[in-house]
Amino acid sequence: MARREAGHFEIELSRATKISEMVALGLEKGGFDTEAKVESYLCEVLKRNREIFGSCLAFEPHGFNPEKRWYAPYYYWKDEQPEFVQLGNPGYDYFHWEWYWAPKESGTAHWSEPYFDEGGGNTIMTTYSVPFRRDGKFWGIATIDIAMSQLIERASRIQVGRTGYAFIVSKQGRFLAYADKGRIMKSSIQEVNPELGRRMISGEDGFLRTQDPSTGRDAWIAFVPVQNGELSLAVVYPESELMKEALRQQVELLVLGISGLMVMFAAVILVARSISRPIRELAIAAQEVAAGRLDYKLSPNNTTVDEVRHLTFAFNKMTRDLQMRMEELRYTTTITERLQGELSGARSIQMSLLPKIFPAFPDRPEIDIHALIRPAREVGGDFYDFYFVDEHRLCLTIGDVSGKGIGAALFMAVTKTLLKSKSSAADPIDVIMRQVNREICQGGDTGMFVTLIYALLDTSTGRLELCNAGHLPPLIVTGAAGEVTPVHCQAGIALGLMREADYPITHVQLAPGDTLVFFTDGITEALDPDRNFYAALRLRASIEGSQEMPVQMLTRNLAQDVRNFTAGREQADDIAILALRWKGMEVETQAISA
Image 1 (cartoon, rainbow, N blue to C red):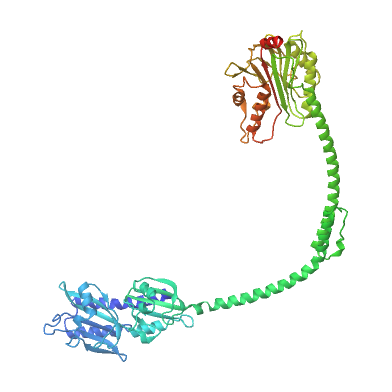
Image 2 (cartoon, rainbow, N blue to C red):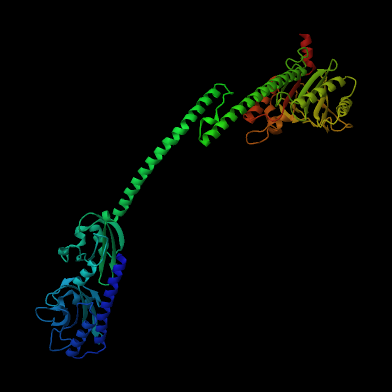
């Protein structure tokens, strides 16, 4: 609204400014050379432009008529008729009025601050002045006057709600059109609302919530500058009136909401009463079931609510299903306990098949031997064995059956039994390996195989013979520094894969104090939480420098290091470790002498 009304003022004032500009242009072109022509032209201009209050041509001293110091013919409206007055006289020295000297000094058109033109139109007006020249020199001023009564009338016609209004201020902030007519030309907007006044006289446009300049109450005010006339128009809308309809609708919505809630509350009470009784019965039934009475039943005919009836059917079905699940659980528990007992027995039997680990041979001081096994399940496929086949030759075995669990344990028992039955002091170990491989292959296509190291140690000389059937080579700890190196041996294929296979013999000469460490891939393939392998490098680092360590501590430290590496991760494969230290015959001789 403010922009629209300001636009109307802009159009009207712009049209008025063109009048004085055209008059000035006519004078500069030399169109009027007598006073009669000038005055006649001014009168015609006023008659043709009813929107202006008056128009004047004010010349420089002796500028139009060399005999006259003042010549300023002025026509204005009085009682609906053009009235003529000669402004220039000693009592009205127009040379000192703003409308004259301001455009003369600036050389540009100028809107004057509104003033009371005593001696001219005798009314409050604002003047638009345009300088005109003759032969390139300032000659005078052409003006048009806009009576403030026109602005007041125009502003009063702006309808802003029921009690809102519009007002106009000058470039200095004085009220030109205002609801309180007693303040026109006497008060300024800065006096009643400094913030609003600052923004209006600076030429801003905006929309803000502030105090009504007239009443001091909260209001919304839109203000827009009127460039032609250097004015500012504001539209005031009292907040109470602006929000009145919204408040009324808010009250209506509140009343409707409360009424709706009351109706809803009543409906909820009725529905709740129809549902609460069977729900209480359901609660009692749930307590009975929780106490163990799974045969407790509910009657679906005790309610007329479909949802509750469906819930009753579902509850009865739940109790039947619970009874069935309990029976299945009892049966499953019985089977599980039986299997656990059988697995525990199988573990005991498997562990009993392994030789006594410490002290293994208390009467043989030339050797120290220790072994341990950690199945991934109750029973596993990893195994070890050691026994003397004659007075000086010790048989060493470590193996890893493919797979885990009971099947692997049975395959391990068969392999271990075959090896021990075939072992003798007379047959070479490669022949024994071929015989055992044939026996395993004759057992049928089980899809299982075993990797194995089979070795004979002459405890009197430290000479070691071994055959490798696809197993990881053992490590040897030697020297005073306890250096760790793998035993380089040619490996054959795993037992149980091919009926006819050869297993080359590898010879190793141990020095007194050397330690052999046999292990399965459950060590090197152990995984940490980031799925990194334990690997052979860490294994070698773990046992390096262990030449003075008891073998039972060596095996246990190695197993503990693997547990620390996995950091609680579930064991994925069986683990077996066998450590042997040959002390040499000098130890035996010293023991006999003692």
